Length: 140
Image (cartoon, rainbow, N blue to C red):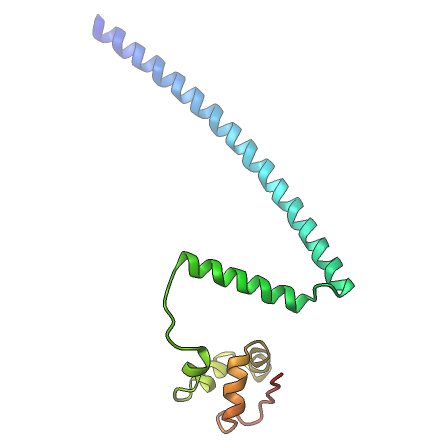
């Protein structure tokens, strides 16, 4: 008799807990949906501000992307610390690493874009033009 009563009490408690959990999940879903909408709105705002800054010349797109890359790189280093004992320039000078990097870029057009984006690689290729003949290197 008392065993049945205790089981019924436990069942009622479990049922209440399931109902409360279900309500909490519904509330959390509503909050997540609201946050998604807010994030979407903020992204649109940021994009509009970026376009205005770019159009006005206050923050050119390249400068923005460079700073964004720096911040993301710094965040990754904070999350995954490592020690780098050599600079990219030094590593690229080993063997024909620069040539391999550019060949892996796929096409010479991609290679030219890669050289434009990576000054260390461009300096290395410029210092050893025999590795990649025909690739124009513009070092600013």
